[in-house]
Image 1 (cartoon, rainbow, N blue to C red):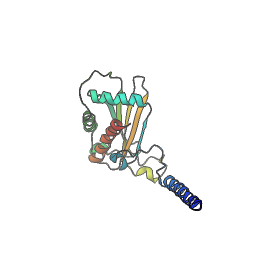
Image 2 (cartoon, rainbow, N blue to C red):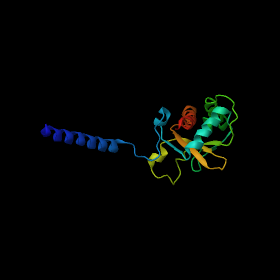
Image 3 (cartoon, one colour):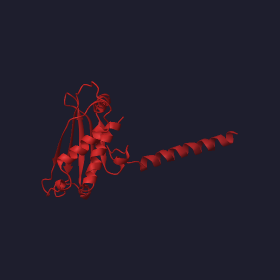
Image 4 (spheres, one colour):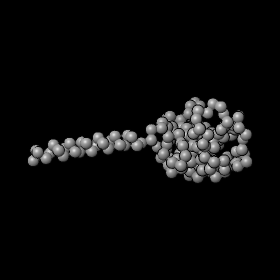
Length: 184
């Protein structure tokens, strides 16, 4: 009986070691890349929570009232801007507000202490500071930032959009809100 235990034990240990090595080799090692949601899997996404307790309270604030936010579009310096041919700031604000409103449940007396802001960055493909060709493959990205009453960031997400079209930008805007509201 002892004669069979050692080979079986050696086989099990070998299997575990090889499996661990395979998992380590094949996993995505890019820091910060999020793949929790289907919309995050389609493009590059970075997200981070700096305070999970305050994040939970900020999510409750969205569920409890209509949220005001700040927004802007960052246009390229070295390339001609084309983003407003596809979407205006007013249109993107409407999309973003509707995405937030989809999480609204009922007006409650929640302290309105969190600030919400997003911006759309249009990729500047002619910027001489671009490090490599991969940095010119995307059309831009959306950054969503939530801050507390001390102006400290408690959550931030950045989601690329690959094409200059309204649908691609709209998907990224909606994904930023979904990422925030489902983070936990």
